[in-house]
Image (tube, rainbow over all chains, first blue to last red; front, side):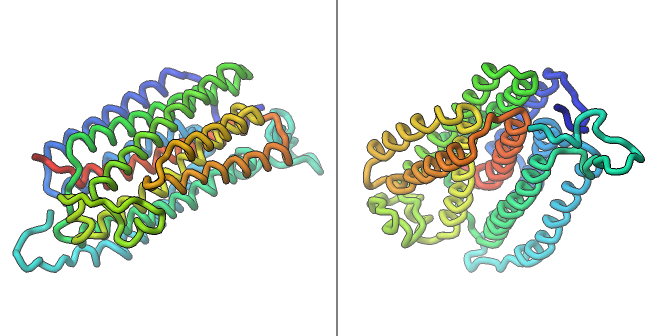
Length: 107
Length: 273
């Protein structure tokens, strides 16, 4: 009772993916706790790491990597397009930070 | 029941009246779940964008999460990641028709998910006890007014966007995890899960004290019990590998959302002493 998605029965790769996710989480925690970057750069780095983790979960755990290409691309492109549109709605406005009266900078 | 159009040899090319393979090469339940997850990702996306907007625009944004909070959130993240792994193993077991191990792995997934909910609930109770509340909301749920003074009480008064964003996002996610655990229980144990859920609901309702934020919301478990009973009695079914797989898709989505909530909400508000 298989669908036409290709099957990759190697269980080992899922343990590697799990390990990679734990390592990426540890990297995020260390970077944030040590406050290695400024706030805006930290947000960018954490978002990039989160996107990498999501790609691993969606591709391997949710099996999308092994589905038919049409389904894979249709889902990814449509949701990404929505997020890009949301970004253009929100972030140019969010960046216009009014300087606070006591001169404290963006945290 | 298998979708006959997907079985090997069922597709007859060029033969009149034969079924054509579906467009996406997957059975319809899987397509339906992916469509639901795409819509739910936009819901969480909107909440996360609103949070990020607030985070950048509100100056200064509080950073109250000490090492213990970050350690607790990291353990919660590890629980969810491990639950995703056990979910994958449950799907494998169901595909080789090994019901026993399918149930074991689904139970392990439920245990990790429940650990996440319990740790999260304890964290919420601690933060509310120390004064982090949404102004005006505490009275609605009968939460005991905290007489705490200190950093979190000041944040609630001066930067209410912080508790609004924190509790709003994490409440939505916690609800999804709770629904996911009930869904897993229904697929794994079918009608045997109903008495177990009833016991958990009653025990939680009796043990959670009246001033706690979860004293009334715990009755969502009762709503889940009623819905699960309706589904199990009105549409009894022997859940197969496809059902386990789409249950897994939902569970991995819940984990995926946490991959964004954890860095944006917790790690971006870390206090370094």
